Image 1 (spheres, rainbow, N blue to C red):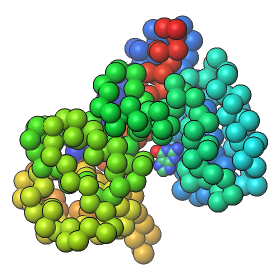
Image 2 (cartoon, rainbow, N blue to C red; image 1 turned 60 degrees about the vertical axis):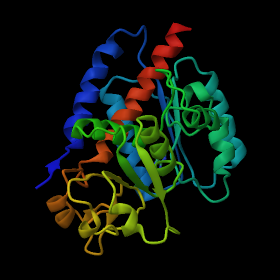
Image 3 (cartoon, protein in one colour; image 1 turned 120 degrees about the horizontal axis):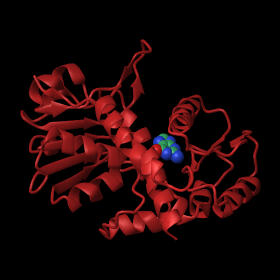
Image 4 (tube, rainbow, N blue to C red; image 1 turned 120 degrees about the vertical axis):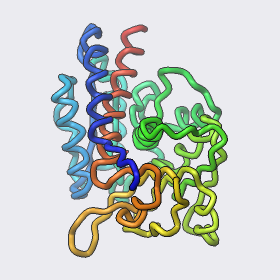
Length: 284
Ligand code: GUN
């Protein structure tokens, strides 16, 4: 049986490590989590983020839950004000946004030094160029997935890594991060022909497709390390990942569960990015 990589434990350790950094700051880190509309999944994620920030003593501005019919201009004005607010170190706009709002324009409006989600083109570009500064804002989910890979003990140098899913939030940045650790990376997606043939040689599998148990356990190479980013709901209402866990766990060397794997790491990395931003702002 595989080692189960417990994201709750690793997230707790990451958050513990932040406490002493927070105590050394001149003022609490400030985080603005903006939500537009009533998407039920977003409501859950935003609540988790704001609660965790509250427990760490972060400053959080009021009234960042905007109605569904908010215009793009109003949202951009709000972001512009937060960019100028010296108490705010991090700004996050929860995605997806309502269809009438241009997501790219909104992400571009967040000041890159407050972009704790790592979604601004400047930060994405820096990551893609392989810059390794300590205060580079890296997207929280791939950053958390890399921490879990470190926890599994896998040596990424020279490893064959297969990333499934090419989203800007996970798949693409994940591929860059793995490549920077000297893995040989294959980025698979919905048009990939014969996914199984790629998985056959994978030492590391990162599944980020968002389809319940699409990746069968039998496709996992014995001894592979599996990071499952998916959070899906089965027809019976239970939560599962993109990987068929019960069969994959018998073949993998290490695997992350869903829930309790990558999910808690995303929140912990958001808190860490906010502390990094606060430290950088207070150095200025
Ligand atoms: N929607 C799904 N994942 C994310 C995330 O990591 N950040 C934001 N802002 N929205 C999301």
